[in-house]
Image (cartoon, rainbow, N blue to C red; front, side, top):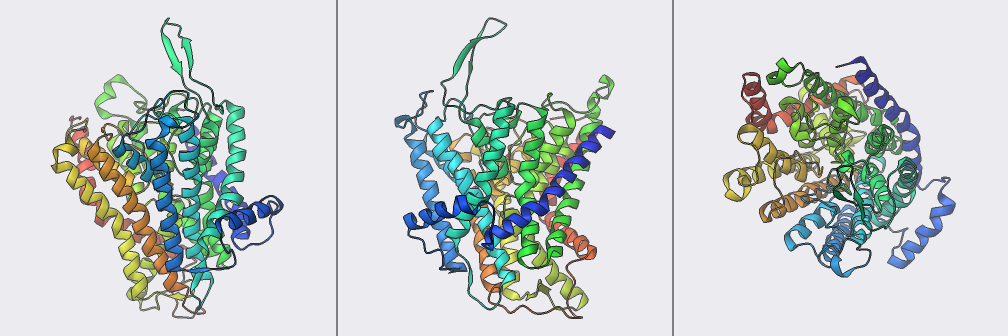
Length: 566
């Protein structure tokens, strides 16, 4: 660990912190339908969209209708993208003459992008047409991110409102998320990327002769527009197989830093939006503080173990572990990117997580396993933090004999049942699919490494899919019928079977009266609650995942320091 590395991490955190309040205020105005500078541009477009789609923007929905609209919209998105993939050879903007995608892979890709996972079991360049990239992938990047924002806004209204049935209008929330937030931010970021050298064109691949006299094909395409929403929408799927290690996706240290900012930007700012909408900004800062502490713990652990390097290579006097790192950016930017992208459910990578030291590689895995509540995917990460907060106040209330209330709403049996159900769905999905892969020839066939490292490759894959992260540990051939099917199902389960009970909780809370705090109310705006919330998250995560982690990175670490490698 170096002083320069620590300064860079601190500087990154300060920039994110400075951007939270202004963007949080702006998003609160957008969803409260207060006046913003962009209203003259987007209000007319919004009205046209509602008219074309026959949406009554004044009519609100209860949680059941809100959920039905969300599920229907995403189902249509999966089918639409699946059709594009299956027939992309017949569609325009296909200079590489890409063929139709096989059925199992098309299913996996369609569920991946519709669920905001962007898990990629294939090398995009050469098999994905520009038409599919633009109308299929980029569109889904926007709408899947918009769905996530809509969920957290609906949940926020459940605390802000009282004694009503309605939590908002899904179509309005989705439209406003895209028009007022995702589109303007993505446009600005894409322009910066283009200025920095990221391609944005429809050109055919360029054939060149290298210095060695060999022929090389250089692919181009609409990269900048995809790259901007990939980071801002915490999507993560790359235009190129190397993702953000590719110089066309991430050409300079400046673009690398901008990508790190963009990944955290909206998710972190939504905590402030939440505080403003419930009329108590302290509530938002408490949730962000819990996220920040967990994030910094992960960064410090990862940085430390990557800095000391592999003990088996100590005689070579190597300073840190540079295997699998992007040499243009170095150790610090690589480990920071790994922790940020898994803490935010993004999945973009600029280094190979498979090459990290066992404990360092375990941190991105834990970030995903916790439900990626440390900032998380846009919207969905914060709603996951709500679930832990509800469980936390309920347990604390029982322990100290105080009324289990959160932001003025009594926490009762239904909310706890739904919260526990939502929290347990992810580990259940991860463990069941991992167990299936470990005991079937189809699952173990694609594993590159033996022993605990091979096990980590498998469980990381299903954690990434179930947690809707999309990053790959590497070393596992997942472009097979078995993995395309199982990870596709895991992505659907991890996305929608968590959203449904989350919205059910919102539907229950919004009907309740807001109770003023009393002497018997557990305070939820102080550092004590931050500490307690972190303790609940770590305890739940440890109890559920510790046995599996013991079989993978933990035992690999102890074997490594005793001279055994895999």
